Length: 338
Image 1 (cartoon, helix red, strand yellow):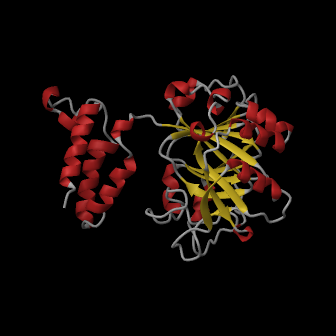
Image 2 (tube, helix red, strand yellow):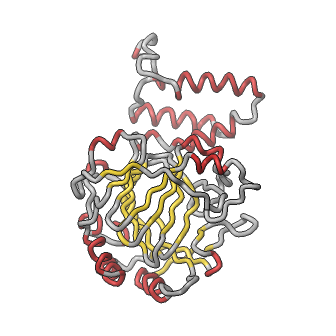
Image 3 (tube, one colour):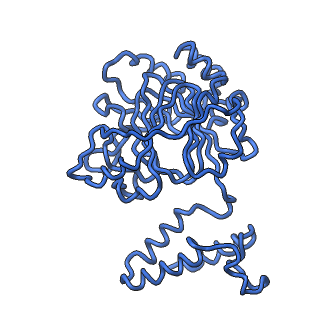
């Protein structure tokens, strides 16, 4: 593993469970020390792993949870199989009580099987958890998910929404990269990935710099955040992050929210359409389209369209309202029919 010397900025001045408003407009990650240390799940875990599991069992409603299981030789790395036609872990639905028991059955193994519950919506499995363990973001209606398992290594990936990741039980390490480092991370296929999101193919524990030489540049730009129980990480959308769970039993709670209305859709849809329509054009045409994208999208500023009467701006109105967004989506769907 290449070393990372730069640490994520840290704040110690946040009131417990009251997310600071100034971070809502921040483009940089920040560690909030002890931000959720008062949570019941954190207090239970500080007592013992058994107490934390007991707390989860007390809220569990019996709905089966999707879980990834990997053989001991996986060593916690949730990844592809050798020829990248599938994955190195098997996905099953299981009772949370059985999952917890299996984690504890192997907690003293030097090389345990990988057991990983990823991104389970707390309201679907643990009703009451979000209310008992709040973060002060309720006005943003975040999607609150829980991640449970033993030691794991989750490949670097990005998420479109902003995230407040709260380390509830155990310890976690995030290695973070700003969005512009994508070209140095050697991202795998878009159609097939372990968590449904494009991932870096580099093994951070043993990076092959002959195969992935630019990864060294990525690490020079990386930041690291080491989270103890009760710490939280504010992670702006689109930052790449590699996540390690470092202890035999770990619980993470994430809160995702976006800065734009849901009716605007997901930007990756535009990326896929650009792959279809633009990527294979001759270089001169791609350059011309880049100028148009800069003008209408990436370098767009308020007032750029003031020369057009409001009544006829159509899709150039800023911002799009729900009716205009539906109309534009319908037009796109019609044009995409072949």
